Length: 136
Image (cartoon, rainbow, N blue to C red; front, side):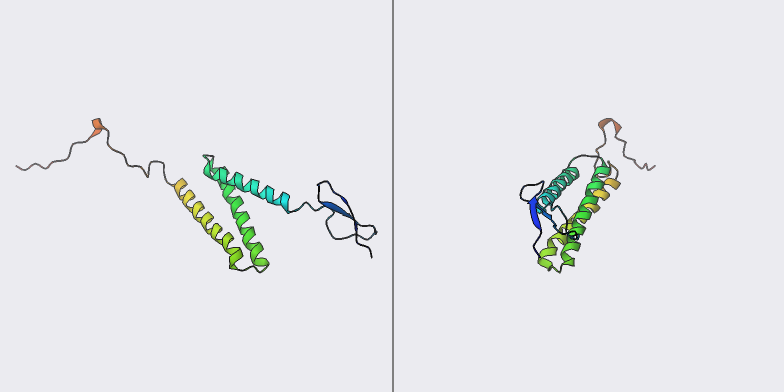
């Protein structure tokens, strides 16, 4: 049997396989490629980092943290499912630990009142006198 013929797909360098027989082939007809997926993930990661570092509403930061949780969890599951050793999945696990610590401390910071961590000096006119004990 002859291999399927190839035609130029919508993206340069990504041919579309054409099956000459009426029997369906169980392969995708268009292969987008790893480059497009990697660029998309890179753009989303950079956007997530910007959201975590910029002064944006807490809900946007929550979504950025959720996106990183899904991304890091998926990376760890992918490495473990193909049998990679710790040298491969260790980076995803270590980054996940750092992400978890960052989220924990961010939530802790959000829970504290704004004035809880500041020391205030009394204003010059509002100094109360020191109580004294009188002896007779």
